[in-house]
Structures are given as C-alpha cells and as structure tokens.
Image (spheres, rainbow, N blue to C red):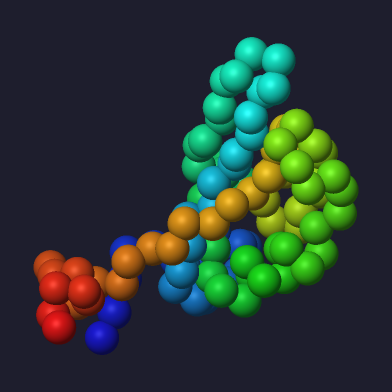
Length: 98
C-alpha cells in the first residue's frame, strides 16, 4: 500500500504523483545548466505526464521553446524531463522490502 507523499499537481487530479517534473536547459554559449523543479507542476501522475508530452508543441532541444499543457507555464527555454518518484511502504522504500 502506498503512503501518500505527493499528489499530482494538475488541478483537480486525485492521482498520486509518479514523477517529479523538472525543467532542464543547457546554455550552449556559457555552459550553464538549469535543472530545477517545474514551477507550475512540480509533481505529475503517469496519465498527465503522457498527455503533457503528447500535446507538447515546439522545438524539443536545449534552448528551444516548448509549450506544454501542464508544465513550463512561464515559457522558459528548455525541456520538461521526469524523474520517477519512489513508492514507499510505511517508512521503507519498496526496493528495500525485497
């Protein structure tokens, strides 16, 4: 059984989050990396992550502009990437129960 830690941040979604949504960009002129939680949707469920990618429009590369339905609502250059959240049972990680 899951212990609730994060809900999907999409408005009205009752699902538990499966991913942390992260804004990523690489500045080729300076070599700077942006890797930070998404402001608009820091956690997202599987269904909304899939929809977020299917409905994304734009130049999918570092420095490119991509319009997503749920993430990157400030229209910053770069991409949304997803880091899988680890499910927990009580105070233990699932991988430690095996």
